[in-house]
Length: 113
Image (cartoon, rainbow, N blue to C red; front, side, top):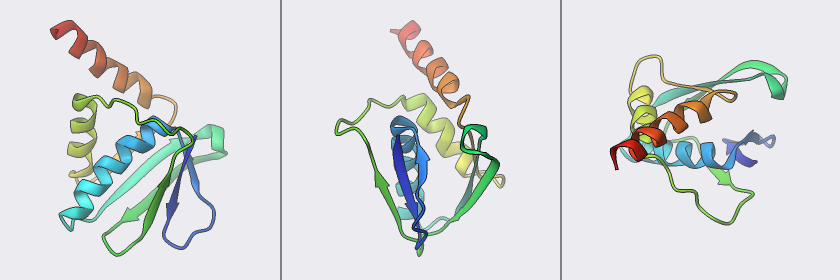
């Protein structure tokens, strides 16, 4: 499990390393462009139903991974997340089902090869 440190909050958000890597790419790209947006995720295992963060360039973030190795990311799933982050509803993630969505993109890629 990786950790996302948001702003001055000393309590990090625990996120799967691979999902955190996707978030890092999407967040870095959007913030580099000066774009603000929301991220909302559900994670019943963490004891809360839903959390939303407002992300803007002036808020600091730090990504900390439990694994030293980077994961190979699915381009299709990455595009889906980036497109979603550009919508007025912002980026929506479900901690219990995100991997199924990513796996579907990976299967399409393997089928096309």
